Amino acid sequence: MTAKFEYSPALESRSIVDIKSSYGLFINGEFVDGSGSSFKSISPATEEVLAEVAEATSADVDKAVAAARTAYTKTWSKMPGRERAKYLYRIARIIAERSREFAVLESLDNGKPIRESRDVDIPLVSQWFFYYAGWADKLEFALPGNRQSGSDPQALGVAGQIIPWNFPLMMLAWKIAPALAAGNTVVLKPAVTTPLTALLFAEVCQQAELPPGVVNIVTGAGATGQAIVDHADIDKIAFTGSTAVGKAIARSVAGTHKKVTLELGGKAANIVFDDAPLDQAVEGIVNGIFFNQGHVCCAGSRLLIQESIYDDVLERLKRRMATLRLGDPLDKNTDIGAINSAAQLARIQELTAVGDAEGAERWSAPCEIPQNGFWFAPTIFTGVTQAHRIAREEIFGPVLSVLTFRTPAEAIEKANNTPYGLSAGVWTEKGSRILSMASQLRAGVVWANTFNKFDPASPFGGYKESGYGREGGRHGLEGYLKGAQR
Ligand code: NAP
Ligand code: MG
Image (cartoon, rainbow, N blue to C red):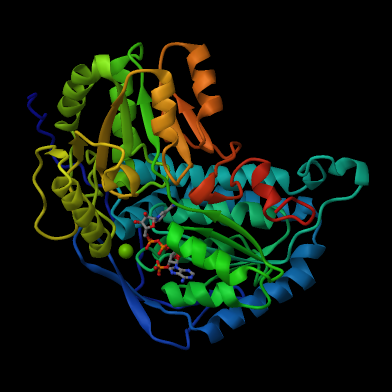
């Protein structure tokens, strides 16, 4: 085993963020008190309480929807696209300017390493707003065949948006940027464990002088989400989260006028062929499953290794995993941060115990687990068969299930043998094999010789139980315009 380099701690200072002791709801351009109780958001790395946040009731959601409706009718839908674009560019620039503040707050509230929030999440957030700002005055090109009609496609109206805790600000950007560019107004609910960057975003809306009511942020738990879904004056529901809640939402809105897009779970295959550059592939495997503690819907959680290179890949993978550093999310040397909540940790523990009971072999990277907070060492299971629950269910943690294959046909069959279909990865030197695999894999995104790469211009979304609708790119506008397929 290679010895770890001894690094001195390199802590990012948290003094750049001014966390208030309590937060209200952001409705009609102002922070207002909620009419219900409140909840606490903690840092999952230390269990320290960061702030007390209002829990929106259905009466509060009603106010937010009314504000969004008025803003839609009186201001936002009347404004030319080039004017809306100015606000989106302004928001993009402010986020870029305040990126360190956002990165520190995201790492504190979510537990993800600062290296990731600083280098991945927040830059992508700003890019997402820049990208969709560019679309706001070009909507006539957004829908295929629309130009002949000679007019801009119309916005839907008020969008209700519900997002998860794994990429809090990034999911907010994926939802809000296209909705606003297309001329909609929004009511957004962040996850109960990670509301703080959404509330800081509300301050950015004020700083950008966005007209009141265009963006409304209502914090709360599942009941607040349900109140958004059930609200009669909402035209569109955009949801990212678990397949179970996604199915419940689809049932709730069936038969209503509401449009829906769902981004749900995944159990992606990461397929390594014997001609792949192995060191690169190992980096891709590690990035695929241990990025963001594996709290990634498109994580490469099923590794398929061609049998002839199995021993070699496994040895390299374990050696690489032994160098991963788990600990304080604000330390710039940290690779693996905290698990987002006690509930998520319990779910990971439960499913990995099932892996043991079903006869798979567990190996965890040797690392010290801090005393407080929620942690799980990077782990792989070998001897996994397709019938094992750890090969079928989303664990949503730093846990990789390893399987093998002999031929490309077997790799395809195993990769597609899942109720999900969000993403997949292929590692091979042959371009022809990449194209052939990509056309046969039933997944919304197929990465070749890389993994977990995101770009605002590239559509992202799933097949089967991974949901429907696309976010990102021109396709991401379709979910917010009349006349689109969904
Ligand atoms: P979740 O329960 O689906 O939560 C996603 C969002 O929906 C949160 O804002 C949540 O609020 C809200 N919500 C919960 N119940 C609702 C309801 N009945 N109506 C409307 N909104 C509702 O997901 P989770 O609890 O965060 O994670 C559970 C599992 O989901 C994970 O283990 C993972 O497998 C999967 N997941 C997938 C993704 C993805 O990106 N595809 C992201 C996160 C989780 P609260 O936060 O207050 O509960
Ligand atoms: Mg938190």
